[in-house]
Amino acid sequence: MSVHERVPPTKITAIYVYEAPVRLWHWVNAAAILVLCVTGYFIGSPLPTLSGEASDHFLMGYIRFAHFTAAYVFAIGFLVRIWWAFVGNEHARQLFRFPFWSGAYWDGLLQEARWYAFLERRPRKYVGHNPLAQFAMFWFMTVGTLFMIVTGFALYSEGAGPGSWQDSLFGWVIPFFGQSMDVHTWHHMGMWAIILFVMLHVYAAIREDIMSRQSMVSTMISGVRTFKDDDPD
Amino acid sequence: MARLETFYEVMRRQGITRRSFLKYCSLTAAALGLGPEFAPRIAHAMETKPRTPVLWLHGLECTCCSESFIRSAHPLAKDVVLSMISLDYDDTLMASAGHQAEAILDEIIRDYKGNYILAVEGNPPLNEDGMYCIIGGKPFVDQLRYVAEHSKAIISWGSCASFGCVQAARPNPTRATPVHQVITNKPIIKVPGCPPIAEVMTAVVTYMLTFDRIPELDRQGRPKMFYSQRIHDKCYRRPHFDAGQFVEHFDDEGARKGYCLYKMGCKGPTTYNACSTIRWNEGTSFPIQAGHGCIGCSEDGFWDKGSWYARLTDIPQFGIEANADQIGLTVAGAAGAAIAAHTAVSALKRAQHKGE
Ligand code: HEM
Ligand code: HEM
Ligand code: SF4
View 1 (cartoon, rainbow over the protein chains, first blue to last red):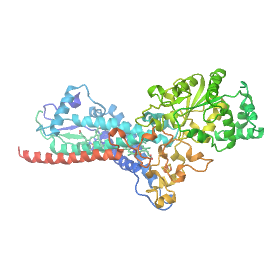
View 2: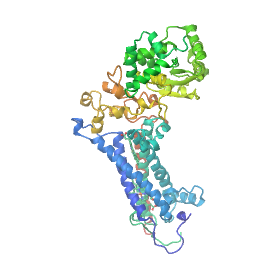
View 3: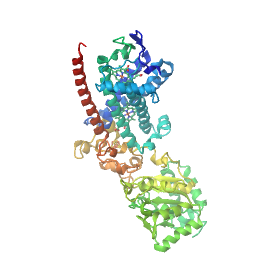
View 4: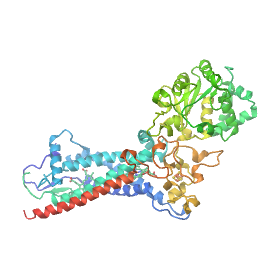
């Protein structure tokens, strides 16, 4: 698959990789996740009590409203991103693929892991995501996002009630996990999985920007990947 | 036993006046959420239909379902339904005992083959061939299978019959097993709760007896009319939840003011039942109104989810019991430390190779 192919030994220094919808999605998605994590945490462990009458405040209501609004942005964004995988360029599809049967992929993954373990002096160059990044993106983001959407809308269906589309589409999830509390717990665990990804992802992006042989953060902003050397491998 | 007696005849025989009977019919219609035009239909059905016997078996249980049932808010409903049931078999309520009682089972099964309702309170333990619960000298599971075979439908009373309840708590030494996992070929109506609300119980029985069909059930087999909303959806403390006003300790100002019990571990947001609308003991109160969080007694597995006083429940799969936040923070902390260490080594390596 061409996305994992190492850069051909020609003199390439800049390639347009991430089209505008991918970049836009990336940052909108990141913002939505930030809101979801903060509000989600406070749904599980609410802020200190406010005094006075119930009619004086609506704090928990606003927190939940923000969670659900960001949830819709997150879910619709994901659908749009899936659509773009069909119409966009080759690199738009990488997020949704896990090349389990490709030997070259596993070889690249090993090399990249060795690079992170300080066992390689130089990483390889990649036009798209490197194999380690793809591993994390597929399992934490593609699968993780799906998991958060399914469990999230299942929880939402409990408020929307029987007969709502959320209930028709996702209501089965509640008994599937056991009961409502189990879905809450798994949804909550999912948040920590995503937080773990974000921590490693942001660290890796910045580190690669400095230490690897190609551009990173600017690529997710301008869409253009530049390489720091023209060596063949 | 008069085979073709109608419900109405049975009631009259039990000394219930026609006036009381009609009142009962309208009460039932109201309890079931049906319009007033249904009262005459219920009356008509009860006057003309041959009565359907209900056999009430007891397995591993604490009898709280029966205790709840006989405290139904409308004495009338209770008397009527009870008189219909106790006529047949309920070993904790019936007058007869011993062989005489067991004979009734055989008699009803013979006379009403395929036409009686089986109500089960408690559940059968399956380990050691069911020896952990013996009824009349035989394992309860045998009695359950025997009576279930020719029944028309089964009502699983309470969380025991529906889900297993405390006797099925890990590690479940007796292998107490909910009814639907033992009897798989009959329609089963689950009426969970520990115990279920009396009015819910009488209404379910009445619905089945008068309309001759089972009430509409949700995905988990519970009657929709009583289990389609969470305690939280109709809780009178909900405005405090939305406002962000919580009881932080049982003796604080918030507790006195009746703030929301979410932080005290209230399971109302994850519990489907009718407590916050019908309430208990003739509509007097329910746990949250008494100042204690809901423990989620009508939910599957409520007995194995850690503290009743913690909002985030334990995840026992992680060896030492921990909740999602404790696990997540540990992992995030470890990741943070790893990142810091990795950054340091990266910087060092880079400095080493500078100028190469
Ligand atoms: C990255 C994505 C998401 C994260 C990190 C996240 C996080 C959380 C967390 C931590 C909770 C508290 C769980 C608890 O302990 O009770 C929660 C609750 C909830 N989330 Fe999410 N969530 C995400 C996506 C979604 C989505 C897509 C929906 C869909 C509408 C959703 C709907 C809900 C609902 C309905 C609740 C329960 C609210 C309540 O009990 O009042 N979430 N979320
Ligand atoms: C909630 C936060 C974030 C999430 C969930 C997230 C998720 C993702 C995902 C799913 C991709 C793959 C994009 C695709 O193939 O369509 C990606 C790529 C990328 N992200 Fe993020 N991201 C987050 C925050 C950030 C931040 C803060 C930065 C900058 C420091 C960043 C830099 C990048 C870069 C540079 C790439 C491209 C990597 C490559 O070229 O291999 N991300 N991110
Ligand atoms: S007391 Fe319990 S059920 Fe009532 S609003 Fe608070 S959390 Fe919900």
